[in-house]
Length: 340
Image (tube, rainbow, N blue to C red; front, side, top):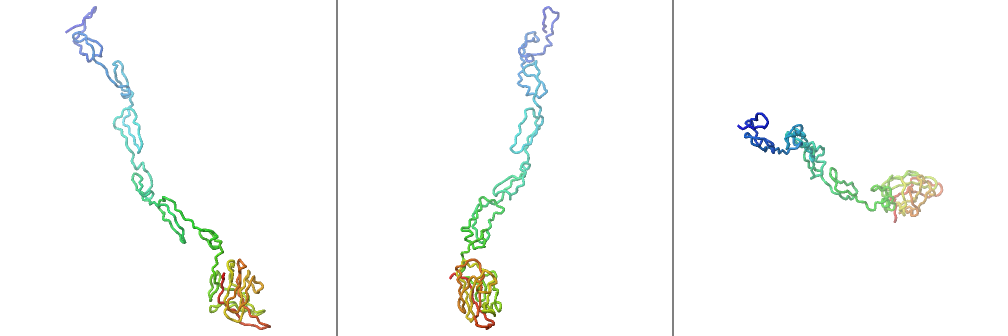
């Protein structure tokens, strides 16, 4: 057993108690071994940890055995996070114990909606409350509708229109081209130029082209009437024995040239007249009247008049003195307006 003698001192150290080896002594430091020989330490601290690598509050030594360091790494424990589709989460720096997790929220919770297949275009898809829905709305292309005499329907209910529906214009739809008083496509006609010729008002016992049929007697021994297809206009019993009856409505004579009446053969004179009032009983009160005729077609030229008039038919028997004629009448077979 060796001893170390310390000059000038008393006694020495027992080297047998030395247990440290070179690996136990800091590198570069010198001690003696059990034999008293110098021993250079080989222990070197080579840690690479920084404070941020060590949990907060925990201590450690790095490369300096004389300096104790304290960590500052955050202890995150178990971190959990839920994400929606397309979302992101920034993982915080620090220690994680492995129990945390990132989870995705359910698709249903992210696609809350109330659309159904009938709300979505055919062939298109959408996610509704977590389920994929394929639309069934049909498409309808634009189109042009040609108007006609009856209503036309474009079947677009419940469909998606991919173009406009155009209703074609009606050519020549102007008031001047529509019969006066008639409404076509919202346009009220003003045209009065068309005249049906001949336009029969009475023929062989039948009234036609009238809003109010028949005649009203303004003067006569009896009221005018129709018998066996003939219109009877009766004379009066007084004066020059003339009778008057007018049609029950006025006529616009603007577009006609003549009024004609066919008289069945007899001994009484008939004529045609026009007037603007409803109760005429004398020829002088008429606006215009024809010559008298006992049989054949009597004609009244109305080419110079325009506007609305009553049409009168007369019956007359000229006698001298105080002769009284009973039951005298003119028999009219036809009455019509014409331009020829």
